[in-house]
Image (cartoon, rainbow, N blue to C red):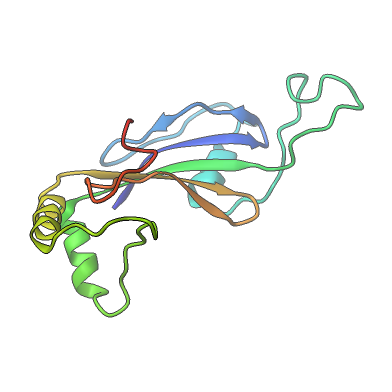
Length: 153
């Protein structure tokens, strides 16, 4: 599993970093002093707290109210083989949340879907993490098991 991309919003020197893509192997972050290298590393490690970005863009007047919540969006990429290892290692307490109104697929379809997942070279999950240590899913693959808001993306 690896972090494949991330985006920092409303944190220290970043109003919005835009999506930063990390490649396989070694990635280097360089820049002048006081431009946000440490803030990016804090966001990647998810060890940050709410420290809202303050500039003329976010605080045009002294009386302006800023958004107090800092957010990091993090995309994790995992291979089908890694999913298999997780399932085998955590077989006693592993579960997959499915909406309560979902009709369960027939067993043969479930086996076919699982086999296709385990053969997938890369599966990407996108989550947001805010400075209050709360996670929320933004995009998760459904593999056709149920319809979701992510299907059209």
